[in-house]
Length: 158
Image 1 (cartoon, helix red, strand yellow):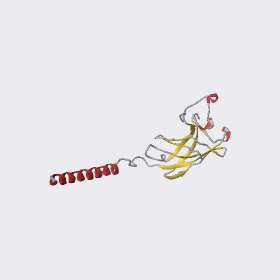
Image 2: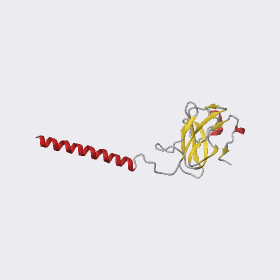
Image 3: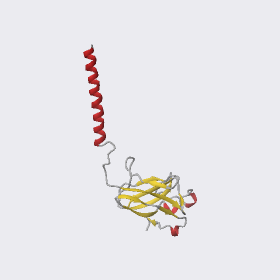
Image 4: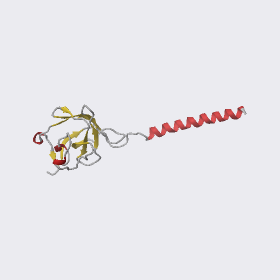
């Protein structure tokens, strides 16, 4: 009986060790891997007339196509872009940047009389800011103003 108990114990140790080792191999070979295109890390602060803008969505869309990156500002207006649920950053290159309230898509065009947000409407919809993302670390602060003429926005219609 002791012989069988020792054999069972050895088998259990071997099985547990194998499971742990296989789990480690699966993790190392792809689960959570950083496969995909090279990205630039993008972070910064969004302000409106010099004051932090909290709880808004920052959208960077590559001008040459590809997946957009998103971030949400914290209470101090800070954001960090995410390319996917597992990867932070944005594709290198020129981007159309839109800032919009939560619940509104970046390119939604909402009539001015229905716009209910602390984000000026000229930073969303058909209008955008133009910013460049490089490989490596990119601090991109977005200093918004209420006056559309002073906002440096571009229009997708032009």
